[in-house]
Amino acid sequence: MTEKPLLVYPDRTDIAVSNLAVHWFFNAFNEFEPDLLTSDSKVGIFHKRDINKTPFVFVSLSYGPDIIKFAKILRNSGIPLRKEDREKGMFPLFICGGIAALLNPEPLTLIFDAVFLGEGECMKDDIVKMFSMETREGVLDHINALEYAMTDVKPDARQVIAAGGSFFVSSNEILHKLGNCFGNRKIVEMNRGCTSRCRFCAASYAYRTFREPDGKKLMDFVKKTAERKEGLALMGTSLADVSSFDEILETCAASGCTVSLSSLKITEINEKRALLLKKCGVRTVTVAVESADPDTRQKILKNITDTDIFNAMEILKKHNLKAKIYLIAGFPETDLQKEAESVIELLKELDKRNLLHDVTISVAPLSPKPLTPLQDAKFMDKKQYKNYMVALKKGCSVFGKRIKLDFFSYRESEIDYKTGFLKGADLIDLINENIEKGDV
Image 1 (cartoon, helix red, strand yellow):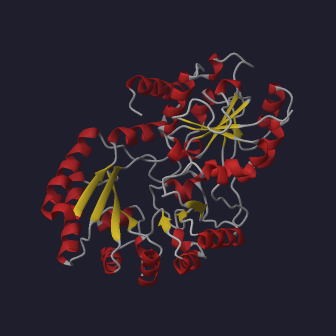
Image 2 (cartoon, one colour; image 1 turned 180 degrees about the vertical axis):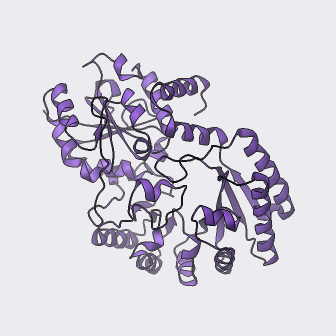
Image 3 (cartoon, one colour; image 1 turned 60 degrees about the vertical axis):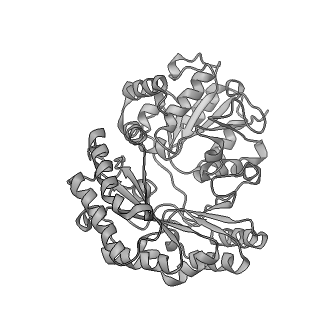
C-alpha cells in the first residue's frame, strides 16, 4: 500500500498557499494526493487527514516563529513536543525542511525524526520510496542513509541544492483555488540564491549561488498566464538579474496581465522597467535600502549610493509608482540615534528634491542569521528599538501624511533570532515559554 503524505505549514492558510515550498510539494507529489494542514485548520484542508493518523508528516519551516506555531499544532493534537516522549509506532514520522530548519537544524532533531537540509528537487525520488515502505524501521534506515538527512544518530548531514535550470516552481492548481496574498495571482519562482553578498542576508549564504529555473518552462508558464490575464506574482531575491525578467514584463504588459513583485534592487529600477511595471498594474515598488547611512551600507556590502536612491525615486515618481523603502535597525558598530537621524536627513533630501511621493518606510530590527558574516552580531534590546522608533516618528512628523511608518514587531524578531541560535533543551524551553505566553 502506498501512503499519502500530509504537509504542515504552521501559519494561516492564506500565507501557506502563498509559499513556493508548499506549491512545490503539491506539484511534486500530486499523484499521491497530498493534503495540507495549517495553523487555522484542525485537519487536512483537502482530504481531512488527521495528523495523528497519517504515517508521514512533512513540515515546512520558513521562519523562526513557525517552530513555535508548529509546537502549538502538536499540543492541540495531543502529540508530545519531544520525540523521545512519543511512543514509537503510535505517532507519525515527522520530517521537517525549509530555510528555518537549514539555519539551525541540530536542536530540531529533539522534535523531528529527521531534518532534511536543502532543496526538494534533490529529495523527491527518495521521499517517493518512503511512501511504499512496509515498516517504520525500514523508513528510518532509508532516511539515515540519505546525505541530507540529519537525525539524532546521524548529525553529519550535508545540504543539497538543485543545479541552475533543473527546477521550476509555479502555482499548483488545487492550492490556487484557495486564493493567496498576491491578489490571487499565479505565483512563479524566478530565482534561487542572490547576486549580491549583503553581509546580513541568508539568501546568498544559505541558498548558495544565484540560479535561474528552467527557462523554457518559466516563459511557457508566463505566456499561458498572460494570455488568460490571470495575474502573475514574481517571487525571487534578484528579479532583474533573471535573464528573462524584461521579456516577462513585456509579455505581461502587452496582454494586460497584472504583475506583483517581491522587490527590486534600487539599481534595477530604470525608465523602461518603470513604464512596463505601470502597464502591468504595479502600484508600489518595494526597495531595500537597509540603511540611510552610506558608511553603514558600505560595511554591510549594500552597494548603493545616495545618488542611486535619488535616481530610483525620481523614476518611480515620474511614473506615479509608490515606493516602500525597507530599512533595518541595529547593524553592528552603529549608533541608533544617529541611524534615525540619517533616515530623517535622507527623507529631507528627498523632500527637497520633491521626491516624497506617498512613501512607506518599513523598519525591522536586525535579526542576525546563522551562516552569514553577521551571525555573531548582537541582537538589539527592546529599549533601544523603542527609542529608535520614537526618534523616527518624531523626525517624520514634519512630513505629515506623505510618509507612512511601519515597524516590524520586536518580539517576533527576537523569537526569529533566538530560534536561529538556541541549541538543545534551550530551544525547547523557548518554545514552551512562548506557547504559554501566546506571543506567536
